[in-house]
Length: 223
Image (cartoon, rainbow, N blue to C red; front, side, top):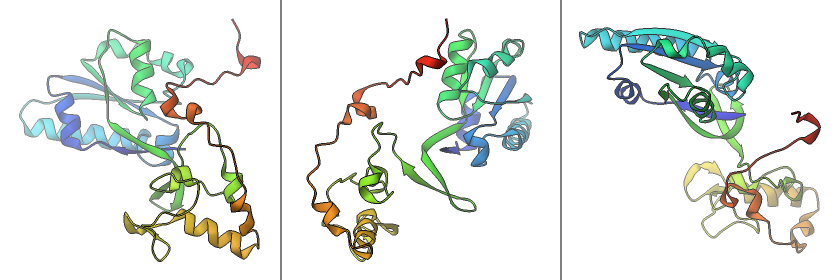
């Protein structure tokens, strides 16, 4: 899933400082799973904004709405009769949400309340970790299911760098060296020789560096 964090309150307040009537739109997708942008978080943000503006002596009218997904026009269309009634709309979705909203309702101003961080999963309650960099050409089968593109700080595909020590990455003692984990697993399974196989250079044109990407499922496309 996409993992995100809520922006600092002061940053959000500054975005809507000229507004008197604001709509906060949540998303029931990934940001709900990581406790950032679901209905509960929308309610909390609404309360914080109301209190903060009341303290400034200029109350802010805040309404709340959470839709199934902000990355799908079908659900974005549910806001058709709402968005025009507000000075500003705050999106509590990943970075896709406010962009889809802006494209659907170009007359309205949309503000992101969330910083999108990475593709990951919950490794412990309240802790999410990066597992995928979205390179568009998955190669984790070469590395026993562990991705050096996402989990190596240098995205190395040919072994640990000189900064790795004691199984930890040089950037932090709290970060496991994924290459140490890969090598150890290969040794335990007696397959260290796998890493000696010469493989073609990875094609990075499918990654973000290759430009904006698009996925088409022709069987699902209809005029």
